[in-house]
Every structure is written in C-alpha cells, then in structure tokens.
Amino acid sequence: MDTALVILIDGLIYSSWLFIVAVGLTLIYGVMKILNLAHGSLYAIGAYTSASLVGWYFSTGYFPWAGFALFIGAAILAGMLTGFIIERGLLRFMYGRDEVVMILVTYGILLILEDVIKLLWGVDAYFAYQPYSMLGRIRLSGISFAGYDLSLILVAGLVGFALWYALNQTRQGKLLRAVIHDSEVSQAMGINVSRVFVVTFVIGSALGALAGGLTAPALSVAPGIGIEVIILAFAVVVIGGLGSVGGAAIGSLLVGICRALAVHTYPQLELFVIYGVMAMVLSIRPQGLFVTATARKI
Amino acid sequence: MMLITDTTSRNLWIAMCVFLLMTFIIPNWLGFLTTVALAKGLVVLGLAMLMRTGLVSFGQGLYYCLGGYVVGIAGTQLGITDVIILLAITIISAIMISLLLGLLLCRYREIFFAMLTMAFSMILYGILVKSEVLGSTDGFNIEPASLMGWHPAIESLGTWVYMFTVVLTFLILQCIHRYFKSPLGFTGKAIRENEIRVEYLGISPKKVILLKYVIAAVLASVGGALTAMVAGHVDPEMAFWTTSGEFVFIALLGGITHVAAPIVGAIIFEIIRTFAFDLAPYSWQMILGAALLLIIFFLPNGLWSLLPAQRNGGQL
Image (cartoon, rainbow over all chains, first blue to last red):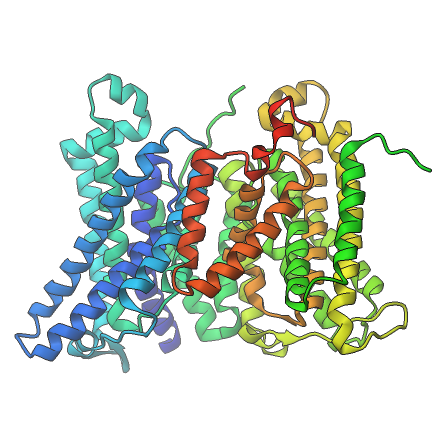
C-alpha cells in the first residue's frame, strides 16, 4: 500500500514537471506547426537565469520569500525575450517550409543556444538549493516528500487551467483556435496571423523557461540539461498528440506514472519505459492519443 | 583494359586509388580523422537514400550504435576479432532489427517517421545506459581487429583499418551508385514527389521504403562497426539523438543528390569540427549551428550543388 502511494505521488510529481516542460512545445506546434527542438535550450536558459539569481539573492539576505517571485519571474522574462528574438530574427523568414525542414532549423538554433549558454554562464554547475529547502518536507502517511516537489503539482494544475481558460474562454483564445484550424482563412478574415505566431512562440518559450526556472532549485544546473529534457518533452507531446494541450496532460501522466512504477520496482528500466511508451503509442496511434487522423491528399 | 563509360563510377575508382596512396603520406591523426569521416559518410549515405525518398530519420544512431556494440561484444565476450566475420554479424543483426522495425516504420511519413525513428534509437540508448555489464554510460573498449587470422601490430592497426575502410567505402559507393541509377533508385524520388501516383503505377511505396530503410540500416551499422574498430571504444552516446542529428546535419551539408556527396560532407564536417573544437572549444557548436542555418537558407541542396556539373543538367 505504501509503495503504491509513493509510486502515485512520485508519478504525479514527475508528471507535473513533464507537463510544464512539454506544454509550451505542444502549444507552439499546434499553432505554428513547428516542432521546436530549441525548446530544451529555453528550458536551460530559464534554469540558468533562476539559478544564478537565486544564488545572488539569497546571499544578500533580503526577505527570502520574495526570492520566489524573483527567480520565477526572471526565468519567464528570459524565456520571453529569447523566444521573441528567435521568432522575429529567424523563424518568421522560414514559414511555409516543410515541417521536417523546420525541425532542422530549430536544431540549428539549439546548437547555437547551447553555446550561447556556455558563453554566458560558463561550464561550471550552479546550485540553487535554498528555495527547495525553504518549503520543507511534508509527511504523507508516514513517507516524507519535499514540499517543493509537491508544490509542482499545484503549479502544473495552474498552468494547465490558465491555458485551458485562455484558449477556450477568451476572445484571443478563439482567434488562436481559428488560426490553428486554418491560418490562411483566418488571415483572410482579418486576423493578424503573424502577431498570433509571435505571441504563441513567446508564450511557449516562456513556459519552457518557466519549467527550467522551477527545476533549477531541485538539481544542479550544468551544461547539457536542455538536451536531455527536450527528448522527454518530445515523448510526452507525441504520446498525447502533437498540438493538443489536453493530450500533453494525459501524455505526461502516462509517462510520469510509468516511470515511477519502473523506478520503484525495476530501476534499470527507467529510461527504457519512457521511450517504450512513446514507441508503443506511436505504433498503435501515430497521430497520438488525442488527435484525429487527417485524410491523405493527392 | 576495361573501359568504364560511367564517369561517376570512373571517378570513384580514381578517388579510391588516391585515398589508398594517401596512406603513405598523411600523418596518423589525419588518417584517423579520415577513417571516422568515411565511416560516418556511410551512415549518412544510408540517410541520404531515405531523404531522397522524402523521409528524414532522426534515429540512424540506432544502427550506428548497434554496429559498434556488436563489434565490441563479439570481440570481448566471444573472442571474435576477424573483420570479415564481425562485419557479417553486424550486417545480419542490422538486417534483422531493421526488418522488424521497418515493417512498422514504412507506414509512417514526414514528422512521424522522424519521431518514431528517434524514439527507437532512444530506447537502445536507455537500455545501454542502464546495463552495467556493458559499462553503462562509459561504454567499453574494443579488442584490436584482425583479418583472416592475421593480427597487425597495434601501432600500424590504424593504418590497416584506414585502408580497409577506404576499400570498403568505395565498393559500397559503387553499389549504391548502381542502385541510384536503377529503376528502384528512381522510385524513391517519385515517392517523394507523389506517393499516391506511385501506387497507381502499380508499385508499392511501402515495400520500396522498407527496402531503403534496411539498406540504410546496414550502411549505418557498417559505419558504426568501422568507427568502433578505429576508435577502439564504444559508448551509448552513439545512440543518443544528437548523434543522429549530426548525421542529418552532414547529409544537409554535403547534399543528397549525388552518391559521393554524403562522403564529401562527412569529411568536411570532421575537418570543420576538429579545427573549430581546437580553436573555440566553447563556441564550435555555435559555428555548426550557424552553418546549418546558412545551408538551409542558401544551399538547400548542400555543398554539392556548388559544383559546376550540377548547373548544366547535372548527373546522378
């Protein structure tokens, strides 16, 4: 019973983290049809920004709780800025190309960003453990969990709700869905599609960076973290169906729980499980679990 | 004297002789670099075959790694070091696995093909990283290779592997060149242009794609085996998606229109990488990334399209 609870809560924590990482990726794909390989780099940028800020802020000894707002806000800002530069500086010249070509373009961006990060922050690891220890540990039926990890579940719920609300209950969301459905017709109907693209990319990038910023206190921030993360985000997004926010939620739950199961029963399978689930879902339903198939065009 | 009318085939024979003659001139490090470049070129050649059909595989690292590990395991666990036998085992295992995966993959196109190939190669990575018998993330060292009972001295091993790689690479290039000029080779292009029309012509695109996938897998595994032999070491990084990304990069760099373009691309790539890594260890990836973007922008057909032969009609 206890093991089952641990697996469930561990799985939920991991799922929440996965969801925050992956939702920006799926949003960008849904609207712009770009599978953004550089999403991992945005995650890394967020992580580095908040790690270096946490280190600085907590050494000054000001009111510690304000540090939370600072490092999360700064990560989001950094992501928005980078996203804006990428979209305006590069991607907008590439629209209308093959989806596969766009993957390669973002692969080029990823290579560049990896080194930009190294140039800005060096190659040494950053530690930002203070926020992690501040939230203490919470005991649930005899097992102790880090409060910080548990709060991730809350954050993921908030992010998911905010996205659902924005997409389904607001005017801007309706415009966005029109663009997702058919960008050419939307343009003809007077929607400023290129503005929608910029806003989407900036929001998606901010979500990636937010994920990085939130993760920074839980691990050491070192070169290469973005490269590892992007492939996980891919798995999640592909399982749920590219471009579907609800799909990303289900995908992350599936992967998170399966991974927790593997970690607590047979740890050798930890990585295998994630890609195994991805390959299995793809072989049965290539469009992912939540996207309907489209007819082939002659 | 045999008269070769096919200029590409003739040029390939000449190039092979030049590479073999170079054995006596070039320093060891350059020989090593060229061997690795040729081995990677073979992987990219397979990838180029798929790309001519309009399919980009982000998972050729799977077979690259498979080739390396088969050579390593056969050497350390079974004591087989003969190059011919090693390559035979590599090819057989690559064919078996690629047939199995290919039956599934030939139903997928575009981005889904890319994603699923990537997932398969990451599965292998996930297994290798967690298997301690095979050295986890560190990998393990390879036994020195031998040829038909003859064990070259360790100092000259690199030279022999170089010569072997050159001969093998150019023989494969001749075969693939024949293939590209065959009706089956042209079908790839037709599938890329319009798959449904190909079906109406009575050809099964799935079968063609399956065959291409298997050949590409064999080429990648041979490339991996050769790399393992010359480097003397394998690690799971060979199956990581960045390795596969590198192959896609090289294919774009060299171009896919000509059989030799991937090899040229691989050699240029290795040279750029070696020098960029030396001059700017923290910004060489940036140089590569910028180069990739420039190529996509200005040279969508790769460096090969710069050659004058391309302009007047070009030759396959």
